[in-house]
Length: 258
Image 1 (cartoon, rainbow, N blue to C red):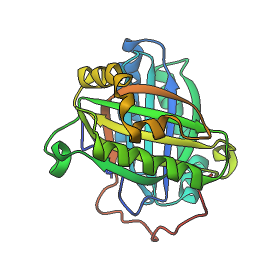
Image 2 (image 1 turned 30 degrees about the vertical axis):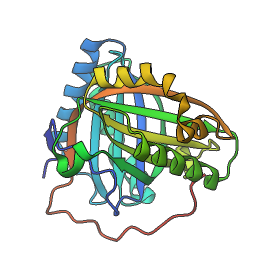
Image 3 (image 1 turned 180 degrees about the vertical axis):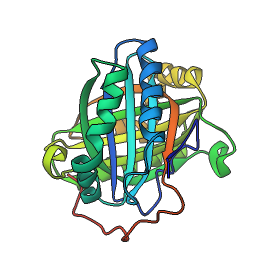
């Protein structure tokens, strides 16, 4: 059975059966190549059987920079992803590369969802996001407890003084995996849904004057935080597991995030 492709639905980042949330980025060069790459991805996936019951969803986003594509896949466990790499990934990548030569693959990391914030406007899925912003925050201390404490502070600040236009913010901790998913980075990934680019830009512009808030001051002055980078995207494609293919085994927790 083929995968389902559409402009939606957006993935549920909080679903408890996700044991491995994988994020990766491609550089394709131009908006025209972005569109061609998304079409090639859809053709490569829609024209083949769903590769593994443990793959729960695969989602593609186009960067507002006109260059990047973000890939976000949800797996029941990391082992199933490595099995997919051995048996199915190359043929899909070959088909995509044949249609759009010269794609640069910038890296892949595994994360686990930690906590999320939801604004009242987003409750019940009442409002679709016009923009997805992914922020990667780096720390100089490998202790995952430090990053959890920082996320807790951010959510406390959002609950007391939310950004106008922010619908949801889902925080993930990077996990040290096997093979090419191994990492020594101490990182938090925030996947945030906004009403649109104007709201996000207004929030960035207002960030300085908001410094009088003690909650946000503690977020910014938190020890060990050494930098952050952000990219903006628009959702393009969703590929979801057919209902007829339930996962073979339940997800089991795997170690602490690093």
